[in-house]
Amino acid sequence: MAGIRAGIRAEQRMQARTVGRIRRKQEENFFDYSMLFIVLFLLGFGLVMIYSTSSYSAALQHEGDSAFFLRKQAVATVIGLFAMIVVANIPYHFWERFATLAYIGSAVLIPMVLVPGLKYTANGASRWIKVGPLTVQPAEVAKLGMILFLASLVCKMGRGIRTTKGFFTVLLVPAPICLMIWKITNNLSSAIIVFGIAALMLFVSSPEYKKFIIMGVAGIAGAAALVALIVNVAASEDMNFRFARILAWLDPEAYANGKGFQTLQALYAIGSGGILGKGLGQSRQKLGFLPEAQNDMIFSIICEELGLFGGIAVIMMFLLLIWRFMVIANNASDLFGALLVVGVMGHVAIQVILNIAVVTNTIPNTGISLPFISYGGSAVLFMLIEIGLVLSVAKGIRLKDL
Image 1 (cartoon, rainbow, N blue to C red):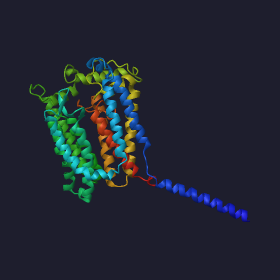
Image 2: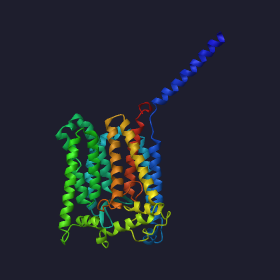
Image 3: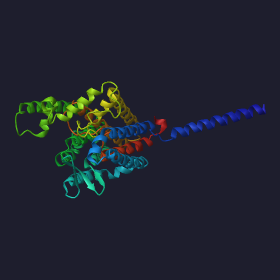
Image 4: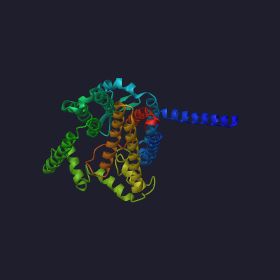
């Protein structure tokens, strides 16, 4: 009998230890390895495609250095990964105290693209600040700053956001930054993205969906009226270049030697790729036909070399990434963390949708990069910092809460 009792007690102690381990595991913080894998995959794939897309033009422009663009992007990626790790290991509430400073800093940085000695011009556009070897695009800083500021503002407003005054206050906060990005840096696409991020964060935090429906209908009606007006004044010699882009979008073949040239070349690339593509590195459109193929139009080269299969695979990876954002946002420990994740999700989703829409001529051509894949040091650096914020929010989630 004594032996049986000892055995029972030993079994009970073992069960207690097992329950204790399970409880401790439930108390552990969550880390989203799935999201991290997706980001690393997109970065690696982006570096491969940048080299494949830019090697020919880089060799011509930089004295035979076919890896010029790859090397610059790789350096920015490594710096971005280091920044992501640092930000991920800092509690995200630490950044809340810098939210207002981030907003003001964005407003100060944007006009600096006009300062002689600091401004950096590429392809006829002055959208960068250059300090020594470092080049920064203020519009990318503004996207991150807007996410931080609006997340903090909405939390401070509380139920005040339910009022009409609170609703339009949050909606008008990004207006000055958007206007500065548009008029000073001549970058309408980034201004649209910043406003889109703000609108999505407001949509998630506000229960008043009727206002968004009214605004959406009014926006569609206004866009349709604008297109009709542009078509009616198409013969005007004083037409704004943005109007010309809309005409080229409606009929790219009629503007094949002008605004429609890049769009047509991108469509040729997509169409010639077929289902499985020509093979990695076998694109013809990148051989001087498609301007700046490694930037905004890289998705068309992906479709040409890897086919419809490759294009859909890239879209699926972005959908998986957005799904992980939603999981983290839904399980965030507080509203501030959830809104940070929603802002980053909006940034990624809006850029992916607009970039693919431009490449496929679904919307008028405008300069929008494909996150993690297109060439651009500032873009990948600040995007990885945003991913660090999301990972920081994820670490605040308890496994038992999932």
